[in-house]
Image (tube, rainbow, N blue to C red; front, side, top):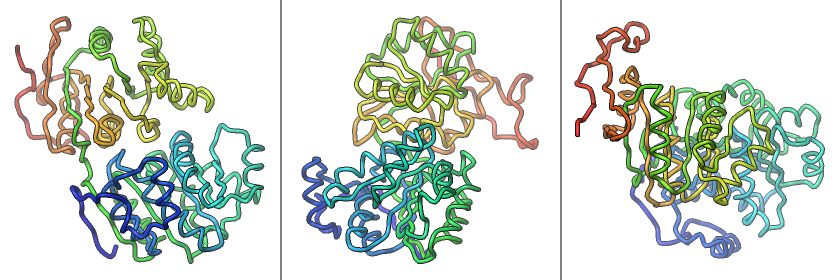
Length: 411
């Protein structure tokens, strides 16, 4: 990539001076967008200039408008279509909604192509000649195979949450889609992290891309506070009940598995809280209802698996609760990025079991900070099992980790 621009703390008073067309500036005024985020300040002028862009920024930093504004502005001046690929149905729907005010200002239609939704409605939307298509990879390939979408018409391509798409196993589909895209196109890739697989995609499918890095991998939202409880598996529900009685605002709870998400939803309902669940076993209609109910305040708690970690754009979440420590440390950053959005305060609580010392260490290495340990008077406080004792989690390939004292803090 040609060069890297860093800008963690830069800001601009408004959107003027970024090369944005007056009609879009008027629209941004109408929807009360006053101050661009750092990723928007860096990426928008480059994209409007027609450059390929790799944008690295944490969740909740305004990436969608960093590509939506340039895409609409450039498509207004040329023929062809813009294509945005997203990993989940929820994220695709939210991107589509973010495009509407800007695209409608130019009379542009959009189409949202996602699995779990009726094909005939999507075909009808495509027959109206949308200028912007937002799609999940599998459903886009379905439409391409039926000649409903003509890839040679794509002038601008965005891969949003690219690292998440790779994590979810979409690499073969992305390769197939890119194979049929015209060589002369503008490509933008946005991601929270920068694994080597993304470097490969950038080198293979992009033309001298400029990398814009706003926050290094593992950077968490500035105003999010962290808390860790060490607790036995059998005491988790008891502690959960205490925590939910303490916090009264919207709570997003993460479970590792959809099976456990279902069990937790029932348990939380029995505790007397309004709750909904969102995971891959739920239909699109059920997932939408859960998300809308959470946004509107009908549900206090939303139980989710990591499939939803990048697809939930809800302001005002008071608490992110990691009922299960994530398998991949990077998912901790994505999960807690759901709170403390747009400069608001937020809090993240994690439940770790005594044998999960190494998982917590991985998270702390990534975020370059220690997770403060708390205890609750009604739940017995545990300690982490030292790495060299029986019962401690075995390390992969026999690699040992540096040892330190357990986190447990007595009151």
